[in-house]
Length: 300
Image 1 (cartoon, rainbow, N blue to C red):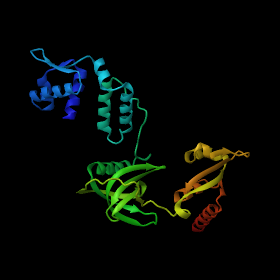
Image 2: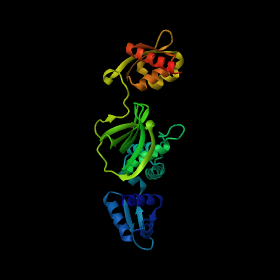
Image 3: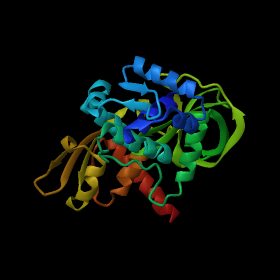
Image 4: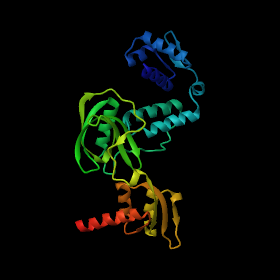
């Protein structure tokens, strides 16, 4: 019904007057239902009216009046901007709605942001679509998952939310095997399958355990880290560190004072900067990275 009411308003924005019979045929309802819709819209404050007779029909008053009654210019821009950011979720439907609202508001979409869930190769788009549809339809999914310990486990979960956090995408879901909410890193999900089974949506807890946990530093807390990074790595430094964490040394290199949970991701970042990085502090981190590099050399 809501779609029909909006559709009637949208059609009337394109034409001065439309016969009730034509609207009834378009929306496959009775003429009486169309007149009832007109009453509902009128009660809601929409300046719509019906005139009878051979040249009668359904009409809207002057558009400037509608423009004042519905929504402010700033609110229009916010609605259109929000739809722009959601086009990747449902491209065809959101694009159509964006066009309709743009016409209705007489305000063009700003095209201020483009969201793409896939990687540069485009291979992960199918996975995102499967997860998105499973979440929206409340369908159970199963997949092979590579744990932080290197094991491959088949998981059966009730998906709740796609989540982007610190350079990576995650899936929040109720794991039936663990009987608890879990967070799965998207890159580690392989061979996903949407099962022919539905579930009742669960409330998202404030915090849940993660199946992405790594071997972290003592107490799994953020660690203050000091790095000297060669000036040749300028193009990479600002990808990973905030501007206020970076200063230029007298020799032209960069001094980075940051705070990270020292897990495998942080170790990989530091190793990727070798041989252009020197660990200033803490000492245990320097020893950890040296040990990892030594083992790598032994395996070559």
